[in-house]
Image (tube, rainbow, N blue to C red):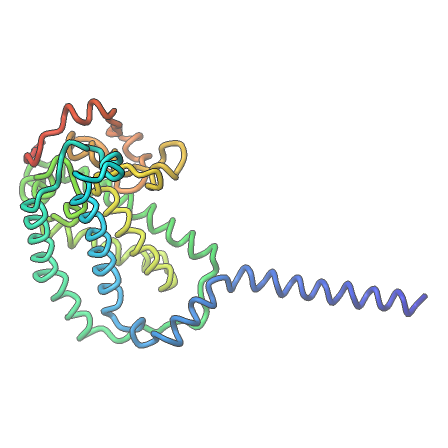
Amino acid sequence: MDTGRLLRTDVLSWMSDVLNRTGGLTQSSALQPLWDYLQQNHHELLRSPLFPVVLSVSSYFFLVGFYTILDLLAPTWPCISRYKLHPDRTVSWPNIWTTLGVTVHNHLLYIFPAAAAQWLWRPPIPLPREAPTLLSFLLGILGCMVVFDFQYYLWHLLHHRVPWLYRTFHAVHHQYNQPFSLVTQYLSGWELFSVGFWATVDPILLQCHCLTTWGFMLFNVYVSTEDHCGYDFPWSMHNLVPLGLWGGAPKHDAHHQKPNTNFAPFFSHWDRLGGTHLVLAPASRDATAEPDQKKED
């Protein structure tokens, strides 16, 4: 009897120990294999101060390249044009070269010198051994999104409410009333610097793991490009996030047509609270659109 009780106690203790270890591994190490792989194979690259710049710039051009191919195929491919917000409007080669030229100019004039200075003067970044938990990774990205959303909402609102700020810095972005992907960084140098500054500083303020920081940077680039892409795909963020909490391409398209609306880059709550929220029906969207005209408040 005592032997059987002792055996059952040992078995229960062993099972409890296994479950605790498994639970701890699941909670704390879901991203650890990925982090170990990155450190073992790309350690010096990840430590370089240039890596965040290369990551964001390469992901941006990859995404705009993908959407630009869709824009060029859309006039002859109904399976693509059916998702366009303005199916009767085409993206021309002059549009592409103009926006691409400004984008490359800004990268050469602002981003490249800043990256070179960072590479020369900033020491390599120490990488922690432990990966973030999956929960802290997701909450870190969400926290950066919430903070960035509030910052850009105020910045964007201010640059539409003050005529001098609009004319001097923000008007260039509104030269296209029907945005397409390359309009994402069709910006003045000041606007590009402001957006890049917050995207860089917010993860530092929230003390995010570097893997979380890179995840936020990628997501920020993806969402910014999607907002300007001019498509309403079923898998777009605004169709995945419920209750109309997300802005998305239709609302940002409405902002380019009616510039006093939809200032927030991610969520819709600040525009709802501020009375600047607007959703255009497809018929209204086509009726108010004017091709490639500059609008000022």
